[in-house]
Picture: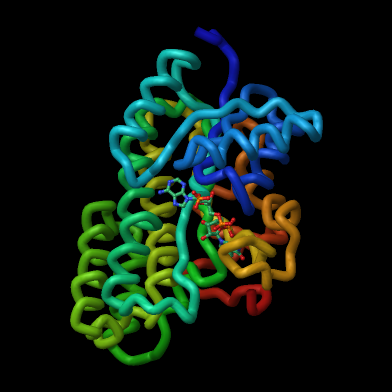
Length: 290
Ligand SMILES: NC(=O)c1ccc[n+]([C@@H]2O[C@H](COP(=O)([O-])OP(=O)(O)OC[C@H]3O[C@@H](n4cnc5c(N)ncnc54)[C@H](OP(=O)(O)O)[C@@H]3O)[C@@H](O)[C@H]2O)c1
């Protein structure tokens, strides 16, 4: 066991923003940093790339869609480090605009990874978070509550429920299940949801972040902080390399949140913009269009 050594983990970090966050943490985090990937080969190539740049990332396989992979990783962290100090929930998927799959299928698949399995991953891993742990949920500009459009009663009620300080994780799961079910018949917009599975998944992640912080505030482990973050519009495979920010720029705010010092006042349970501005998730406005 690496007794007393701190440890940081970034999910889905063999490429893109996650890779950039690992690089940043390797440079700044006082402890071991784990690059993780669902595909071991792709992960090992990424580790070698960082080693060539003079960094020393560690590696572990992790597919958040595979519960046995998650449990193996949790047991590894527990036995080697006695817990976890930094977790960046970065892994996610997005269908391209021109994807041929019907919306119903896109909704099911997107929600599975980006919301339900991210939530399950948190529920499995959070019990081993150490005091002063930092969790970063990578959301999106599409994850702002006001991406639920309109002033009609249904949309207003949906926004109100999602932003209620009484909302529980179980209730949020039920709401997102309601989106997926409605998407099967194309009636999700009648329930107030946006016509985007990706946006809904990220709205869910930012709503979840607020619920998670509330639980941490009442946890016997002191000073655990979680925030969600919009990394900006970044040049990665997900954006077909149309994003205007570099991976390094996209990694800046997530890494900053991952490295918030002990006993800092905030942000806590917040929604943070890529330039590190703390944005009002309920009322907005958002600083720019991305
Ligand atoms: N790029 C942007 O402009 C932008 C904007 C807003 C938010 N974001 C968010 O930023 C995060 C990173 O996005 P990106 O642009 O860097 O995307 P990306 O280049 O497509 O990288 C996504 C990463 O997640 C991994 N992944 C997907 N499903 C996984 C699973 N089940 N288990 C473990 N890893 C999994 C991918 O692994 P494989 O290589 O095996 O596919 C890949 O390493 C995502 O949460 C995304 O929604 C991105």
